[in-house]
Image (cartoon, rainbow, N blue to C red; front, side, top):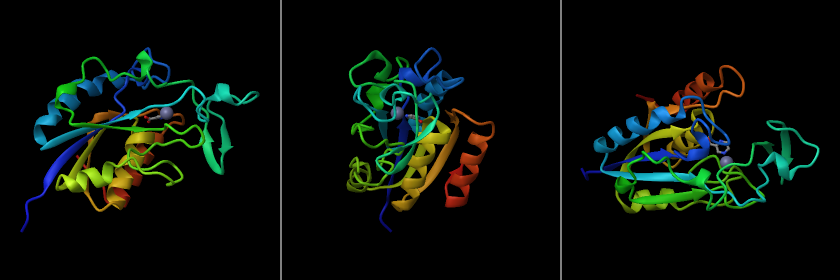
Length: 202
Ligand code: VGL
Ligand code: ZN
């Protein structure tokens, strides 16, 4: 049987999702050393980064009269309105300073189109555009992926679900994930949803 490689997908470990950031995830900085340590367990490491233009449609400021965390229709899709975060080229969009970037082979950017958000590192929320991640992993001979990072109930969840849909064996590295929990229980529900879809919980 052909040997397949493994890859760790480090999701959105960026300053704006760390304590003090624009869309801070509680305890988000705790994932940095854990993610660094996990890199040793995989043949390859890739990262995604949320990489929005300032005019992005997920930002509440771009919807006059609407409130933060309200849900609106964005080009036909339900969209939670977020604070301005991870704007291309800003300090908030940089990877966490402690993240071992030397180990990251490729970075896949998402959320670059103003009219559609992208929680998954594979496809935007409307599945209109791919980032190239699935094709790249297959070209590298990857069959199994580990998923970690921020945030469990958004970008980690949708990345893991798409990885399953793309045919990879997927394991969630829970100790290297933290979530937003806009509503209490969101993170637990996200983990359950991933498990039901076939994501292995580790
Ligand atoms: C994320 C909300 C908005 C995430 C990105 O990385 O989980 N969440 N943009
Ligand atoms: Zn975003």
